[in-house]
Image (cartoon, rainbow, N blue to C red; front, side, top):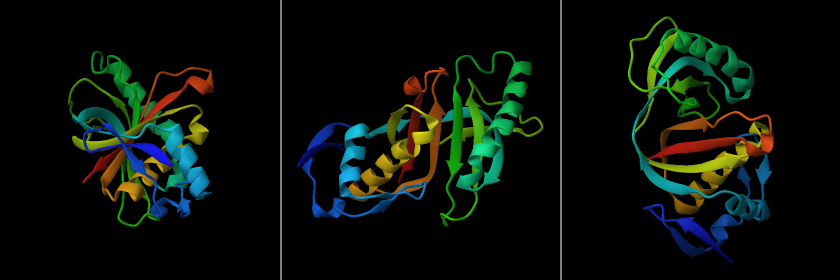
Amino acid sequence: MLRSVPDHNGLPIKKRMGSNLAFNVTSLAGQRFDSIRLIEIFMSYDVVIKTVSAQPLAAVRRRVHIRDIGRTWKPALDIVWEFLRRRKGLRTDGHNCFLYHHPANREAAMDIDFGVQVTRSFAAEGEVICAETPAGEVVTTTHIGSYGSLAAAHQAIHSWRAATGRAFAGYSWEIYGDWTDDETKLETEVVYLLR
């Protein structure tokens, strides 16, 4: 079976799926994926390598476990949006962005910057800090659909990493597109910094 895999320049190349993909992979949500599901994941997401610039964020940092993100993000973003309403011009069309600082121990709590893309750096005020997504080579994919199934996009990137042998560099982030009440049209870009 052939599949399209991006090379180091982000261009698709054809590669024969080897036996290294016929294994179970554990997703971030703790689900098991067998080789058939792994193939479906590869077919559902266009995983691309590209180089990105740093992006400043107005953010509130919290240390939380992955399981606690659902109850932590909104209060943190409410603080950021209140700050931005008082700082006219700092945000033009920036989106919500969650920047994850991955700890060495995957079971440990991690620092997460719950933020909004802004146009420039600024002085911290209260809990709101000026954070920044890292610049460099990244692997990325776009998830279209409900936030409840966003783990599949992360799984696609983790599966790509397992298939290519590339290493992550300790940071990932999610950029949430414009809101719509139609969950089938929600877009979220998932990005992992590469070594």
